[in-house]
Length: 469
Image (cartoon, rainbow, N blue to C red; front, side, top):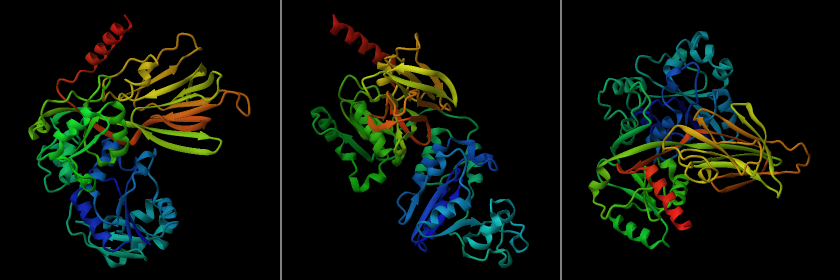
């Protein structure tokens, strides 16, 4: 199988990138689009959160036959070198690496960027396969071409740097990027010299195309879904949805996020019960104009959870929380680290939990943590029925912090085994759990202008107090 490895920063991906992928798909069995992780030699890669780059890449390349997006490199602390990618792909077929003509100039005398600056560049130049893409300003000289190559002239020219400049200067980028990417950049306020955590903008521009998720056993949810039927897309067309509508409660919303986050469409929920903090109150009617009003669109990254057990490692993504708990009748003994620094040598408790803002209203709240506003770039760290240390209080961490739980049980085999859980999914017995914000997985949650989390929490407390009386 011939595989074209189309790597790049894609910051942002333009229609010229999509045109290259379409041209490659005609000549290769598979095209892997590989957005790179952080690069010390290309600082503009870090101008926006990698999760934004991942979202824009998915929106740009979706639907092209034989083309797939591999965003795994974005989860890593640094980018994968080309020789490493070459070795990985050789296990699946014959890899061809897509490069621009700017990288081969000077190849005739060994002074090209590949030969001089790439790790094991001379070896790659001599033995690897390359697809050379002609770039404006860098004419092809046959003498500079690597030994094993093919040359493709792209059907259209373009540069991400020009797109970034236009956005910064408030110039139009229509026709330079995929329409959904243009909307995404506008909604998130990207490339304008600052970081936007909240935006107020129409949920949808044009006609609503909704992927609707609901519980058919919930009569009220069924009734709302019937009202939305004129705008609902079928499963075969779900890639064309411009919003995911969830009807029900928080569990339904979180399940829909886990299943559909790669669509990179905003999520909007309508609650049918009182304990639903992530969903809006449904209106009486759903005209198309309802979805064109300004919503408070909050961007919420997921959690990357990595566990180590006697059987090996495991990685999960979740949008609300992950925790470690006792797997025996005895109290768990857990060492708690933050950013590789021991904060609690031995936590004696039922366990400990890390939650995002989306999860702060759930199990973390039950564990004694105060919920934080949705979209707040913080994590919540809380203990579960803590016995020691005395006076344990939940901690609120920065989104860049990395939390690690380790077994503090000195016995082997452990007398106090631990079990890991991510979003209610049992991860089995674990010796170690590392939790951090995902660099790839993120969702946009749309809330109506009258949404107020604190008022909902207060009403719930008052209702509970009344029931107890």
